[in-house]
Image (cartoon, rainbow, N blue to C red; front, side, top):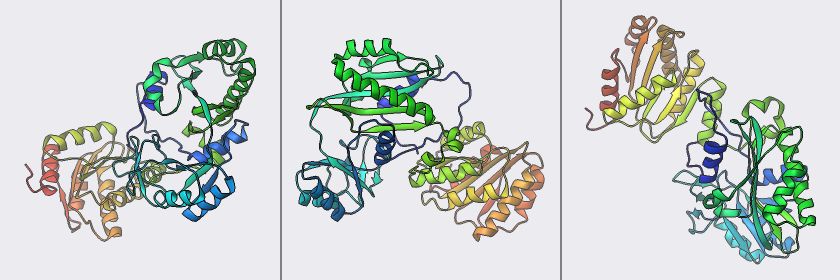
Length: 423
């Protein structure tokens, strides 16, 4: 999903996790809803609220009635900034404190089944299907605590601040950073620095040390790349409790973390990316109306640039790679055919490893399987067996398809076919 990430996430990725590898591959991150994150923390003996998941306003009313205290209702979506977000129902945020069961019922009516928009969601927001409810916590102090991996130093790093919560993005310069070796964990020297910097009492530091040890254990056992507790709060009674958490995990470790990855939540766009990746496709949705099917990231960028030069806008990045098959191409067409914003498709293939005649056969087979193309399709083939491939398409009698050997000519044609005033 290409929704805007928060400044804090950008800081972690661009500053702390900056990699020196020359190539960047498509990366999908496992997304856990908050209530699943809390279950994982509880399993590793990290304190979290006793929460309840509800899917109806009636269930929300029942849960708050059983709590017998002011309660927090939190929208369960994969986005930060929920408290400052806005619902399309009543304009209020995605985190609300209610004082009674009836108030919980009324709030839940305006939260479940409606869209919540935050700085990290698409413009239309995300549909909320679940709420997470727990007893409101009387907070004395908020902290930010995170573990991640610094690739430049090839070792994990602890990030901690006594200014956590929703304003952490504005206080990243106050983060204390402590690098450590995984086999040794976070030792006494580091905890002594933390206690001195944050002013914890001996009793508080004992609790914090336990939380940090458990975070390291979770980080290692679950192949995590980021564990972020924000806020980790100290209550007025002196207890520590994690009110919210954000995790990312090593996608390449999914084969040994089946239980964890089975909890993954995906938006509709991410579901398409996920299914496409299983067929070897790299799919990223953009905001234009011209769908592109290419083989190679460089050709995809060149295609995007040329379409933009001639006044068009690309609706996706869909790379079928060097090993394109009839199955993968058929799925690529399915993605674009089902995308209502796509008004034309540009197939731009350079045959090297993959033969252009095989691509042509796959295009014809996909058209037959789908009952023809609903939008105009322009095909440009170059490289191995390109003449044969173009001839196959020309003789196929498939409706709504044009062939063009010239790159610029093909780009001009698809822009003209998808706009009232093409070049």
